[in-house]
Image (cartoon, rainbow, N blue to C red):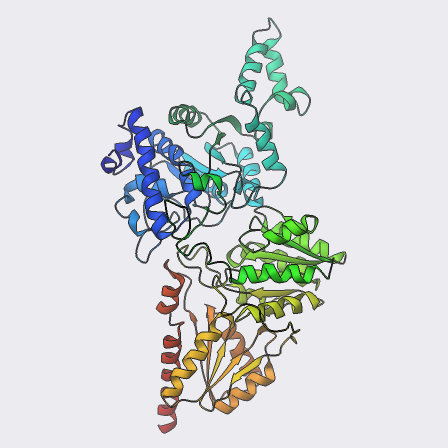
Length: 630
């Protein structure tokens, strides 16, 4: 075993070439072993094992900084930087994170979790380094999918103009989560498709230089050209015109070749971009064959590649229910179009994209563009449905407000993975959508408790002549769609249970545990009324205020941050209606630093289970009794 003797990059630098090959295999075996039991981001990490080894051999980390974009591919990095013995605890409570975290190791210089941020962070660090007159290297590793993000392109543009020493390693594996789309991936495909491309620039310039008298002048002149031969003959011209020195493309699984090119890039001045070609899922044939499926996966059988539950866990998910229902509605309305940001499969739109490819738009990792493009479609009479995970929709805050809501356009937002997402931790939790969406003008905001409600909400949103949002968790539905489809009335909630002592208000995913909590409290002699508001905005003023007055005690429950969320909206309503002589308590997430663990464990930790809700309700009612008696 080579890996058992590698405790830090210092040990790594002493290994022979044949030992490096063995080390690569052992790292992949360890990643496969742990991820098959814990779940995680597999294909990306398997694809960068050789790159990670080469980076830590060439650079003097942690003094030199390596910033991994998104962080899906950081497992080998963690194993080689002193966390091998704790790798077994990956993505578990009190274990190591699935993403780089500054709090976890000095080898992680920047916290990541969202795409396309590494170049901006790396440039900021380079500027700080030079202002402080310090001397160390900075490397940003970004994938071809993440490079399509607007923020990454903004950083490329600025970095080339700043001229600070900075190395960008473009890890080109032809994938993000789904297949990459757009002009830039097509450009990279042309670069990688010609095996001679990596030598064209050097050979062409060398040939010109040897022409007597005029050769060197021609080379210098060529560097000033904005068109013509330079664009035809020089690879990586896009990056060179931005101010980068372009190297590559090279095989990202050849350690010796990688080390040589990294040393060359390390010693060059100014911004440099090294283009490498890797295979996502390298070394595990199931992941190589289906990199999308093995991008982020739960526990699975190493021998068969199948998840522990036989791949059935998504069959009754909210995502799949949405995917089925939008197809049903789109059959009768040609104006319905679907938009996603590199998450077509994850958001349930795969079948829609196959059925109506001309009505499906995957914009790549570009949430801001997706939202404003939807606004453009809506202005011209279409009914765009934008499906994006809650944590990623945050990136389009201004576009939702400025381009959709202020214009009162009929764009429907499907907000998947809202609330706690579990092992991916706080960068991926969707805990903010209620708080910002409910303050935007004209928009209606809904949260389903099951498949029937999701189907009804989607139909309602597409019928609504204005912006709408439907927010649901990463979870199985309580039941699939069974009831006849009915339109909902905006601002009209449902009374699920009458009671006299305590009003329980449950938002979306909390409806079932609140009903179970009401049964537990009934056993304690506390009679609970239960309301499912259906709409977070607008609230059912008449229903909520009537039962708040009648019960005198109110407990709101939501899988969201308490501050600014559903409970805050209820408090604002009660104050507006001057209902001040009652007791109100809000139950939800007290802060965004939830840690990482299974979703059910986190729900229990924060009291968002039937038992936890009943305990909170009992405490509230007992306090009210004491104050009344006093």
